[in-house]
Image (cartoon, rainbow, N blue to C red; front, side, top):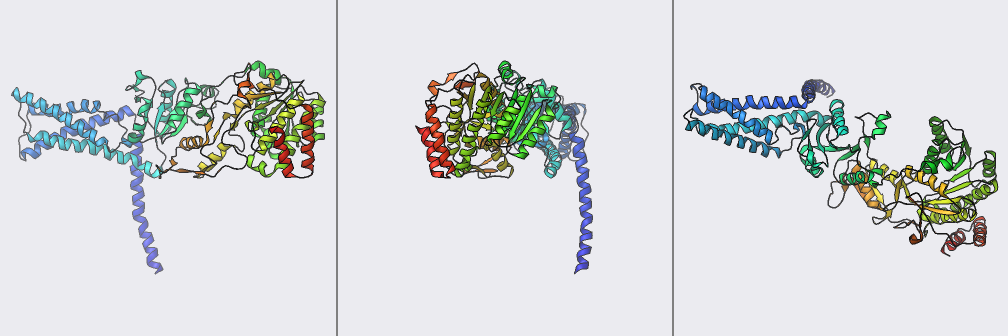
Length: 639
């Protein structure tokens, strides 16, 4: 039994080898045709149609008269040549030479039939004129044969070419139809770069400028944005590239939001400043980030405010290895401080942020491994390095974890802040900035309550010195936030988990948050709580759906059971709220010189009350009484 199997396997290889050879030959032909310039492809098609339609007429005569028959005379030849001359302008008008053959839809057959019918009718009209002038008489069946055979020639040649050109795409899976949104100079340069250096095919431009609609730019037709859905259905479009440098953040956000509802991948041309700086080339594209969906117009940071708190000063950042802390340190070193001190409890995070900062800036950097709860370490760090400004970003922030670990949450977030604030006052630190959260407003979670206590501690200590807390919502892409989780779940094929479809949250970019934190610190006068203007709240379900669409995938729903990624509700976890707030009393929020920074109304808790409350909370924590700690934690805030 083994010998015949061996013989069979060897014999089976031979036809497979011939098949591979044929496939290689077809792919070479396909590559040669695809590499031709688009104008040359049109010329070739026009020439083919001219010769082919003339041949069709000759065949029609041969069938009608049957051999042997007299060859056509000069008048008949002239009218036969007239047929393709009439047909080509009709084909041009109806878009037969504008279609991308690789993505030719089946419905294009009706356009070809219509074009051939119109061309035949016009030619028949010319025949009647010739007959009336007694130039020539054609058999009545010849136009019928011409229409039938001409349609077969025109449609057959195009669908045959489509099959040939689509062959590698089916096997290799990397070619795609691309639409460029923006027909300006950057868009045309991008089209040329994609044409020369990519297997992707630029199908069309989209542009909001009505004067460009229907025109060709760089040999590519310009359509209104409303036509994108039709281009996706009919032209095989699978990707949209944004080239809209002139659009502000609000317009860009609206465009991305609209595009994200369609089944296409969205990428964008990098900023011109990045191209000039050499970070990108024109043909290089970056992925659309979820930041682009916020549509928040950038408010430039006040350089005077930023420099006044950072330049030529010794700065301490606690929690420097976290997402906010790391962003702050990157912003700080660009302002050339005298020294930057990094305090971080996580060894690897401290190593990473120090390594990155030393690579990008020539600023003295001191890395201190330890916790803000270590009072001797904190005092020694502040005095030894003569720290002038403190940014306190160290905190436990995961709501579900802190609900289950209330003693650690209080130890780090409340007592750690007290240790740092008391040491800062003792060392005569000029400015102190606490990074807080919107969860501190009417908190329902241990995390939110501990951050509210931290705000009160800073406010009490800062009554006569420029200490402040800065409160804001979620930061896109920060460690432990929902955005990296959604990205991970989408990359794994889903499902994407939501706690509740009704939940909304405030979001801002991490870079904007860092800039506003620094400016708020510069605005502090004494015990202030600043609120960063977060815009409109975002529905978490809508955020998840947009992220799925930005990845070029579809959402699986009851109406779309064939979608790629499903959304699954897991139910709200302890301590979570459906809606977060930024203000206890929005009516009393005060404006500042920075339009994105507001100041909250003062708290009414007195120094003696806070001192007594902290003592009671500390006693319960030392006793390990979680229930009492939880009660004390919320009781003071409610009062």
